[in-house]
Amino acid sequence: MIGTTIAMTSLSSKEVQAMSTTVVGDNGGTSVIYANWDDNPLKTNTNSKVSVNDEIVIKVDTSGYTKTRPIVTVTYYFNKNFMQNANGSITPTGTNNNIVRRGEVSWLGHRPDYWFTVPKGFSEPTSLVLTNARGINQYNNWAAWRNSNSRGVASRYQSETDAKAMNNGSPDNWSRYNDHTQEGPIWEHNGSLNWYLNTRAGYRWDEGSDKEAYERLRNNTRSIYSDWENTGAAGAEIQVTYEVKDPVNTQYIELGAGVHINAGGIDHIKIEKIALPDVDDTPENQKYEPNKLPARQGVKDVASLTSEEKASLKTALKEKNPLLERRLKGGLENGISIANDGTATFTYTDNTTDTIPGKDLVYKTFLLDKNKHATNSRLYTVEQTPVDDYNNITPDDRKRADAKLGELNGFTPDYSKSNYPAGLFNRTRVKAESDYKMVDKDFAKWDGDKLRIGGVEYFGRGLEETNGVKNNSLIPKEDLFVQIPKADDTKQKGKDLINGLQNLSDAEKEGYKREIDQLPANTLEEKQKLQNEVNKVVNKALEKDAANKALKRS
Image (cartoon, rainbow, N blue to C red; front, side):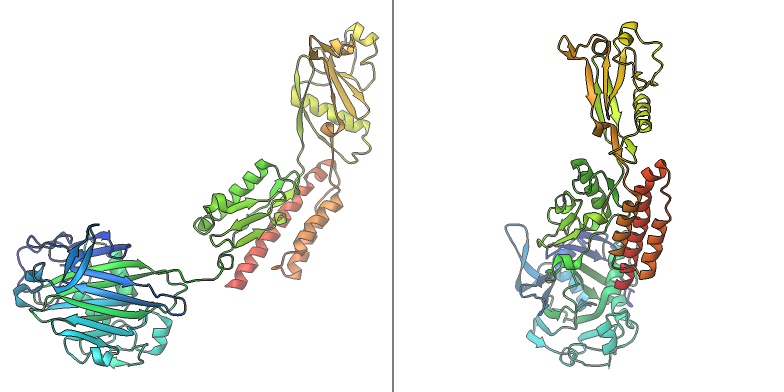
């Protein structure tokens, strides 16, 4: 039986398997409420008018909470009367509860034991104020709180070292240490922290209950305080003031409280998770750092990215930085902007920014432009042909341009002239050795470094257009040819970028630069591929630079 205590000899026939449920917490978070007397903690027996959620109320005050004074005041109301508010919430009236649950709390005349926990991230209480049938009393240290056998306290810490470290301590040790008053180690004759939890929260929770909440309660509790009330004094109020140990990094706390009837074997528990104010005033751009891409993206012009290239880069950065969704102003979609040169700016919720230079995200790749040019009968796709010297186009360059035009448009250039219409040949419009037939009645003629394409109407009859339709098109040089980047320049740009990486050793930099120098760039094909091959080496260097940076931080 869950939550069973050491005396379980006279349980009622109402006893069934216990379970827990999650409800909206008293402070806007979530609460797990549990009862071992009935299977529904929302109504712990048929004679009850309220649930465990109302029987144990936890009110948290962080109104004065700051980074330098991280004080939290928690008031625990046990079995108190409540006033129902118009919005459905409840407010303790401060009077003892003589109607709701009194019969159960004083079950067979036994005394209720009210208890609460102190999380690991808190100091021991700086003040405790107990309000019960005997009046109001304040306790500022353990000696005062523990001067009665009706009040107890146990801790997992027995030394200042463990308390400061906020480690697991020794929860089975029967001594305790108070980091606020420096009391201890003191022997707790009622038992260890685990003994207190076992006898008040149970050794375990069975199926149907939130076992993770139970485990968190046990593992995250540094100490437990108990107040054993008189039989007729059903209600109690305990106001506790704590100091949070690490306010900058503590975002949530989880508090536990309960009602325990030893002879009746009754355990009612509430575990509430509460958000603390964010007091970390460190600028966001000092707390977070966006991740770069695992590989730079190739673009045509590193000084002027297209809208499509910017969108692609932004998508890649969003996928690489999912944890910044709630940290960026407007989320990932609106918190990342891409400049013309590929520089990415991350704008945080406090308007501070981080930037990743464009050179770390994009590189100039060897992309070939495609354009459309038409005769009066057909639309042709024209792609640039890479050349060694754009200012000195050779006959071989033109032949390669012819072959590419044919490959893209489904024909083989015919230079033979034997199949040309006689009138076309006699007019000498496509008579030169470099002139050729394209598709059907379309022909091509070089005009310096430009290429004129047209049909018989133009080349045979000299008509610029027929019935308003243009019969020819002059393909400009820039649509036909493109300069292959100089190998030395391409390699040097890659090496310059590697030299600028701040987390590589000199030996590592030299290794990557040597790898770039060894890349072949002799044939036209090798020259065309060189930019991409250099980028592969640069990507490896960027990856190593990021790894070295992570090691320095750790």
